[in-house]
Amino acid sequence: MTVFLKGTDDAPAKTYRLALLDLDGVVYRGADPVEHAAEGIDRAQTLGMRMAYTTNNASRFPQVVADQLRGFGLTLNDDQVITSAVVAARMLRRYLQKGARVLVIGSDHLRDQIRLNGMVPVDKAADLPEAVIQAWYPELSWQDLAQAAFAIENGARYFTTNKDQTLPREGGMAPGNGAMLQPVILATGKQPEDSAGKPESAMYDEARQLLADSQEKIFDVDRCLPVGDRLDTDIEAANRGGYDSMVVLTGVARTPAILTAPAKLRPTYLAEDLRGLTESQPQPKKEADQTWHCGGQTARVDDDGRVTLRALEAGGDPLSDLDAVRACACALWEYQDRGGDMDSLDLPAFVVGA
Image 1 (cartoon, rainbow, N blue to C red):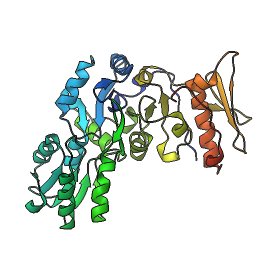
Image 2 (cartoon, rainbow, N blue to C red):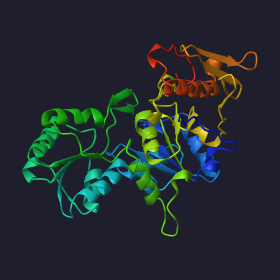
Image 3 (tube, helix red, strand yellow):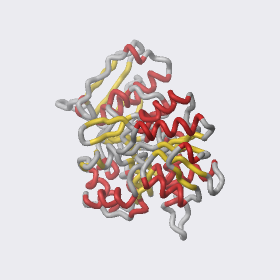
Image 4 (tube, helix red, strand yellow):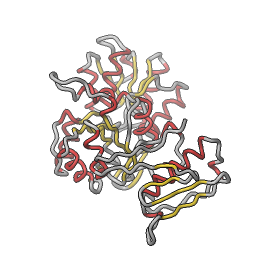
């Protein structure tokens, strides 16, 4: 059965207790803030929503990330930043014995987390590590990749912090950790056994536990809202873990990918940016004639794949209206799930989220 976009009469910040925010492409791009992100976060916190900042980036200490966010005018504690280094070390603790040697291809932050979790970080294959954990960091070199390959060839188990193929930076998209895994995979013929970062749901699950104080019950899944800019990590992780989710159009995800997303990558809500946390989400509804309606916009997909958009009020431009995207997404998801040919579609040229 197709799962469609949901709607909320109240702002999501009133419906959900905890926002699990991705960082790259959602709150910042490299050193630069994302437009309206701080504004949306501040408003959401005023409405009682708590924030966790979850990132697949394992290269920076939470304090450094928190300081950057505070530089954008946000108010937060260091422990609200949950990195894939934090989650990865907790993951390895479940696989390895206390005192196990781990070859760390990553930053000092990842090394510290390995130590905090009772394991011993080492630097080279000659140290006979029991496992390799690989993460992206700016100083990653050929020598690092070679040491990882040597250790894995000698029997070390292989893990990674995340599998992001790209990383949003100030200048555009750069190769992410997923791209940097490929030389080691090709050299050894071995895939990582497990990944701490999204699209696994562990990032969200761990954040719920880490942010519950000693007097408070862990946040329920249905009261938490992951928010991200990537369908194949942020949103898939939410779906795997049984969470509702929101995709924002400030990073990787664009409307064509949303409209044609397979079931495992479909979000619960769409928003242009983090102001969407404090704005009601109109509920798309299907009419008797198979037309989808959302706000003042309608969308219909015929059996031959022809997509028709229409504004209910004169002068309304569907191509620049997020409600039209919402209606069109539901119509296309339904078309896809009943076996429609997605390759032959002529998708609308939406301006919003283009």
